[in-house]
Image (cartoon, rainbow, N blue to C red; front, side):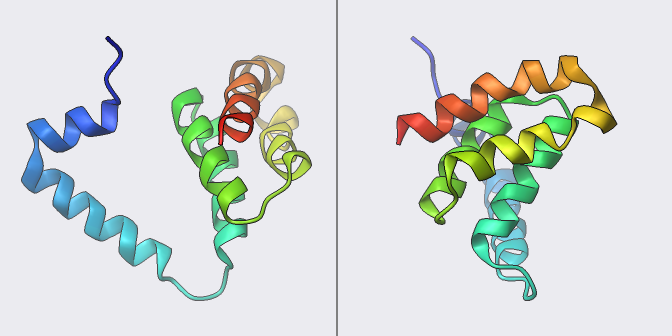
Length: 102
């Protein structure tokens, strides 16, 4: 059975997870960027960090925030000249999967 890694984190480290959730809430509430733009930036950062699971999760959230498939794909593709083709090829399927699942 594949458990959601974040649920494992919350179950195994509840105090740390609660503190992390507070940090995420504070970042989400920062002024200056709308929720969709924040999620697209998160996709680009997760791609640069070569974290397909994070790309997928933020693709889901980006779609819920009004992002189009093209915007999600574009956030991954922005890394081509910075992180290379391998990074884009590693993360693009996760972005598409996350967008298509919801």
